[in-house]
Length: 459
Image 1 (tube, rainbow, N blue to C red):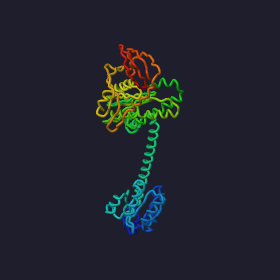
Image 2 (cartoon, rainbow, N blue to C red):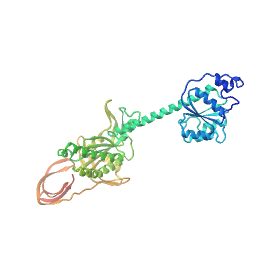
Image 3 (cartoon, rainbow, N blue to C red):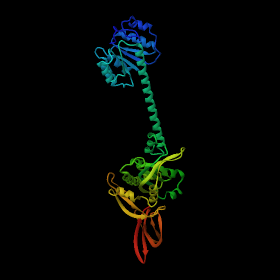
């Protein structure tokens, strides 16, 4: 309890034996402190102590409630809102330390400050109270200005904590809005880099070993000639949305959409040991997801599509490129160009990877074709590998769709050249077609007087 014998308040410079140390003298003669606001709860089992404290604090501008014991105080705290509790240590039944422990189970030190009233500074009660979560303490007999200052300080700290919490919530809402808005144009990984790193918006670059994936629809340009704008946008949105989700699932970063093509990076922002593996597995998952895209197209009466994918791995420069008004996070280097060139050699449903990519995943992938190509802009031939499946953590295989050939009643004579990727050889051959499907044909070639049947299927 707050001791009446020693006095409730002791004015500064007045000895305890002075007549001015009586509660009534101080209450009457002391000038009122600065006006403050806040709702306080005084917890003390002595009614006279509560009454004197209530009057003085009310004169100071506070709204004051009283509780005669710890249990009543706990009930009031649950039912009402308070800004601070002035809690006496010595009380019967539930003492101040036990009451403080119960308060802290539901209210944090910033949510509800508690100032303990103790008989002696540095006592075991003081240490225990601070360890249990008391914000501060005052000793008896009280110095009025010290009590006022400590109450004011704790309320100011509480207000500051609430302001910081509000700012943090506003910042979180702002970041959530930015993530949602810019997430439509940038990957989550890029948005996080911009928001969370101090250098996120700086025009910086760094070298990284990255696996670059470029996926493009086959024959889409010609297809657009027969479709209206709404149908074209519908096909693209379904395709790009589906493929972006797959890339995200494999922790890739969508760099940009290039018409009907998608450029993605694996390792541009965060380098991992399995970047190439994830890139190849992602490419297979994307080829498998084409079936989902085509089901949507069928439901809307739109034509089916097919996709080719090229992957290259190598050291590139990654960073923000552009101007202060407009920039983008991208990758620059020969691996990016090579991925684009390799993709140009693919047919629908194919995945071609560079030698460097294959070297990184050789123990995991199955390939069914290896050949050398001479891409535009490269001084030497490039070896590419057509991926059929990947094992390890993913165990995926490229879908093998074989259209049913229809036998022709009469063979059709043709003259043709061999297509290597998208490059047409300069040598022409004579032959004839004996069977057709929507995606393939059986062709019989005539070379040096010999008949040699051949079958080529693909989009």
